[in-house]
Length: 194
Image (cartoon, rainbow, N blue to C red):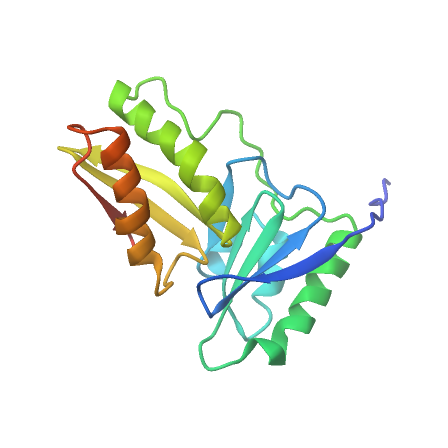
């Protein structure tokens, strides 16, 4: 039987605009570039053994995994100094054991669909190139949802979900950029499922 290879794990924590979320950054990739996994409940985490374990902590309300980080959202009544070391140590030990963060293998690029209209392809390209890196920096993700009659709908995940500043980010940042780069095509941007 093959034994999991122990690997050196360097992990640090980063605050983000959502006071209930904390970003745990590691020194290697946990998911493919541009792919993210959002687990709002323990039941939704069937393809992430790491998220399932984190939900064993009563303080954990949501887990989000992307590129080289895990964003954990805590219950509002707790303070990070009370729980952050336990969560950090658990993630570190889990990854040091060589266990996978997620068990999903994607066989196609989830971002692009050959059936997309030219406008949708442009919107997805702008989201991926200009907006996704900034949102990931804050421990979250943005995903294209739909485009209809000038209205772009996006999904905000990770630390962006429930973040007090997400509305400002959506309107002042994302909507401003898309309406400026695609004038006449994009009129507004809305968050879906927030």
